[in-house]
Length: 158
Image (cartoon, rainbow, N blue to C red; front, side, top):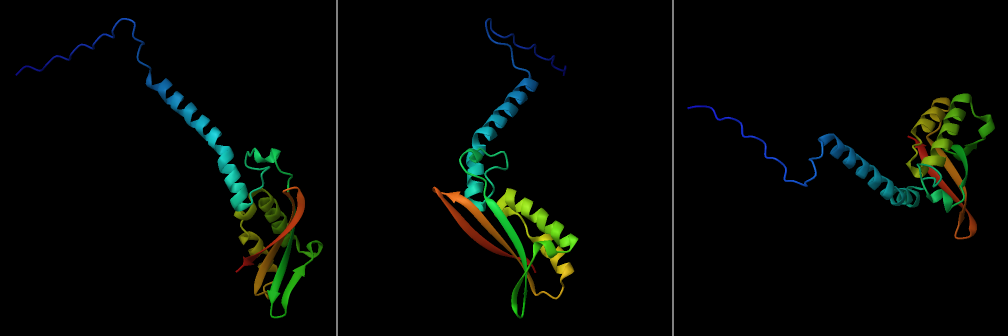
């Protein structure tokens, strides 16, 4: 049996647009995906702000135009048999103080998504007698036309 000759390509009908090269199709898809993400991001960022207290001024958010940036004060406490002893920030050793400063920056940007693990480990390394390390965050924020203070406490170690 004789091998078949390849069939000639069919010619495009007159007036038809030439076929688009694959490279420009992938660019068009990439552009469409980028526009979709850009269009959906405000809703995603708003959900993060409402659910996890993410700072509306961070993460490429547009909610920053609707809210004042929240004030944040943090302090670290050691829990023992006698209750909680709050450590003065200016009296902290350099490692726990640096960990507290780093946590404050993460907490200011990421809200409750910020982890207290590194802070808890640094404080516990300096004060191993503590049963637990506690972090208190005090927020002053403008909600519904009123300044409001909100306090959250979190266990940083163990």
